[in-house]
Length: 226
Image 1: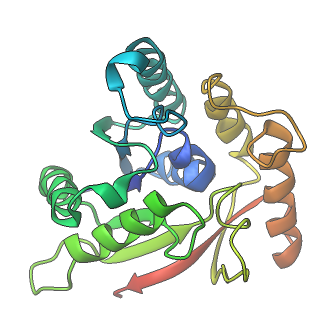
Image 2 (image 1 turned 180 degrees about the vertical axis):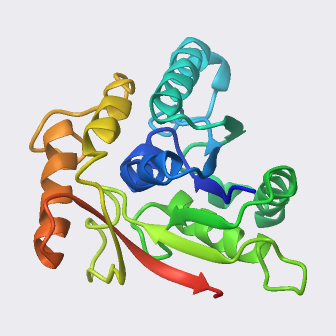
């Protein structure tokens, strides 16, 4: 029976930025992978959150989510509608329950999610909710949890604290990560913004240079049970 992966991301495109090079590599090795995106991703710049005003943009973004995840062979994408950059306006328990529900459906062995000290409040809360939803009880299915970095969030917090200890060589799958990110046309930025195609490639080169590889994704291990 193949091992299962669940990516828990706060926003559309976080899953690509955080771990798609690694997950596409693991899918090639026979893993099953699923994505859970918690936030709707479009209302944070509005003075007041009016989802109705962003209905068309959210529809476009949801289509991009599916196409990006299809690029690497994600088996299923679960999409929720928590308020963009306003997760702190929602009861933490509500977010935990959503993660727990999806976890019970997927029964993942491995979870990839956000780093606890990202600048973005939704990332911080997602991390906390994941840790709560995967408490190490006797019958807990999740055996490994890893935090990923998100360009324009992890490195924008001060003092810098992301100190990875796990590295995946994605030299063979960096192209798939780039192709998936290209599907997020409504989210991509122009270089030198970190959340650009050039920024993604440069960061993978930087992390690779640290361990003697061409392209790498770096993670902070949260809990690994062997």
